[in-house]
Length: 277
Image 1 (cartoon, rainbow, N blue to C red):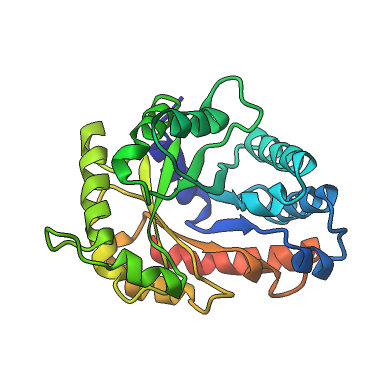
Image 2 (image 1 turned 90 degrees about the horizontal axis):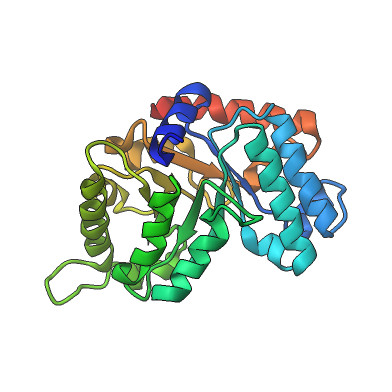
C-alpha cells in the first residue's frame, strides 16, 4: 500500500485540497430533515458523499457526533467509513485521541489494526501529555501506512493562551511541537510525511507555524462557520501551497441540505480551494 502521504497527495491533485467535515449534530440533522438518530447521522454522511460523487480528497467525520448515540453511533460511523473507503475516499477520523504508552497504542490499534471494524486512513490527536507520549500511537500508524494530525494551533480562541505559552527554552508550546513533529517526519525521509498538524485558519500566527512544519500536511479548520474563508487560508499560510487542507463542515449546507444543494456548495468550495495548490 502507498504511504498515507502519497495517497493524500494523489487525492489532492485529483480532486482539490478541500477536506469535508461530517458533523451530524442535532441541529444540523434537523436542518436536513433527518432524524436525530444513528441512522440519521449515517444518512447525512452518505448524502454528502453522494453529493460529492465520492470525488473529495478527505472526509472528516467528527467522532463525538456519532459517539453521543453510544454503540449504535459507533456502528454508524463504522458503516460510513467503510462506505467511503470502499469508494476510495480517504477518511480522517476527528477523535483527538491522545494518551500514554500502552493506552495510546490501544487507541491506535482501534483505528489502524488489521482486525478493527473502524479502520481509517488518519486520526486527529492532542498532545497535552507530551508528544513523546504519543510515540507508540505514531509507531502503529506509520507501520499501517496511516496518518496522524496533531493539534498544534487550534482555531478556537480559548486555546491561544496555552498554545503560545513560553517554555523554559524560550519556545512557545506550538513552536516546540513544530520542531518535534518535523524531527520525527525527517526520520521517515524527504518530502511530506505521515505526521500532519492542525493549524486554525483563524490564527494570526499561522504563517510562522506552518513554515516550521515543512514536511507536514496542514489541516486548517475554522473555514465557514468560524469566520475564515479559503482566501484567508491562502493569505495566512502562504508557504503551505499544495499541502494545506481547508476544512469545511457546517458551511457545506450554505445552499441547503438536499443532495443537489450540497453538491453545488462542495463544487464551489473545491474550485476556491484549488487556488491553494
